[in-house]
Length: 262
Image (cartoon, rainbow, N blue to C red; front, side, top):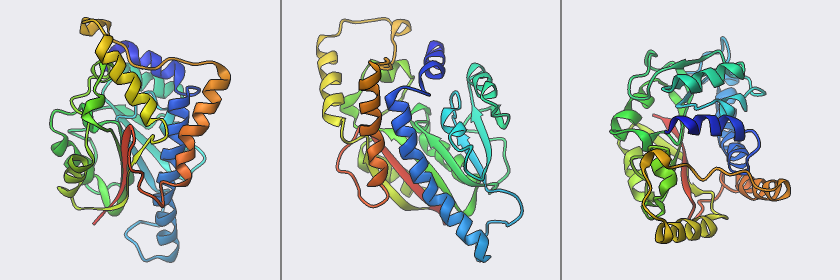
């Protein structure tokens, strides 16, 4: 990711409709895992220890807004982020469990975490299969992983270049990636579905008309709209939290999965 994009993230992700709405979807899907973990801890029929809180790891946690969103959940929060500036932003949020490191070589023992998230991370890795294997390694048997990735290669744009993406995924390529690990799908769907036609149209039009630009001058699509537009778009994106646990959406800008380690 371009260095200035971390500044943009930190400045916008607590208010911008895309981040706020998506975060509500993420929290809702994560709650499925946390609810099952808590139930199994209470009845004593799971590998989850009763001592201490469930451990949550956010791999590639960026500037920490999503991890901060778990403050009201009863979990111990940890994060790994390769960019030192982003780690500093996390510490400003009081997320002292965030350290610098990379997804391909996590500094944790096997099976340490009850829930691991890698949100828009795998598309940054040269070897996403090895990266997912490393993420899976640190999950406790019976624990969960929550993953999101950008969907549809035809949506590739300057936004992806600015964020240093290596790829966008199709439904089948993402499913194949998951199938290579000891993971059972609990939720698997497109998301950011409602706005897909608008995003697709904008990306394709920009691609058609854009002049060549140097990579160093590229920026992401993050622009703060008018207050009322921002509120409306937040509700539109966040509304998918009501259907995702029950319905596989047919299309979307991104893909999301919650899987249990078997």
